[in-house]
Amino acid sequence: MPDRSPVTGSRRGRRSGSASSRDAILDAARTEFAALGYRRATVRRIATAAGVDPAMINHHFGGKDALFSATLDLPFSPAAEIARAAAGPRDGLGERLVTRLLELWDASAGPTASSVLRTALEHDGTLEAVRAVVVEALVRVVPAEGTDPDEQRARWRATLAASQLLGLVMGRYLLGLGPLATAPRAEVVRGVAPTVQRYLAGPLD
Image (cartoon, rainbow, N blue to C red; front, top):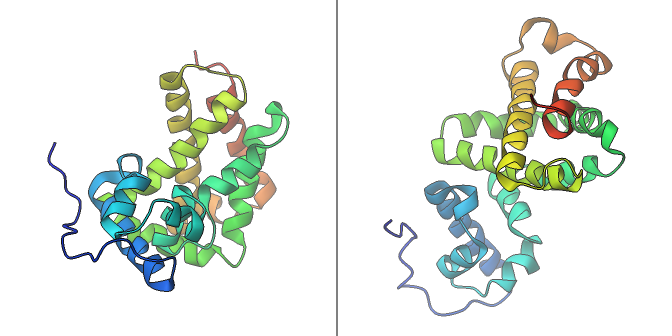
């Protein structure tokens, strides 16, 4: 497959850990994520395109997940929030994930996050990256719960759960679907969490 990374011949070697290097990383990351998607846009590729050492990405952003969030100007890191919600007993995993999702969108960060998601819907590369970062974070949750050590099976579970979580955001906050848009948070959790729980940690047959 041809390499679609930006041409870097005009770069003047490695940049220092300055504001300019941070901006260069963000520019390169936006290009790489849009062209290759979240999974294939590696830290090394982004660093090469930006003309910096890969360690600068951790220095400025703390890793690939946070860098992706920064490229979208998200007010929170989806991967970090999923990891936090996953901490705790296995039986409450779905409830914690749905509760945290609603807390984030009902808070002051919600309108900004909704705006980002609307923009992503208009750009295939960005939308794919949003889906991928959520699925990848959920994949990490499934083995941690001891449900499916097989990665392919875990990815299937994570994809099903992501469809519920992203669908909830779309229906409640972007499309305003009937009662879903106005129902109390606790009622939404009761309705959606059991399905997310089954997808991640319950029987699928």
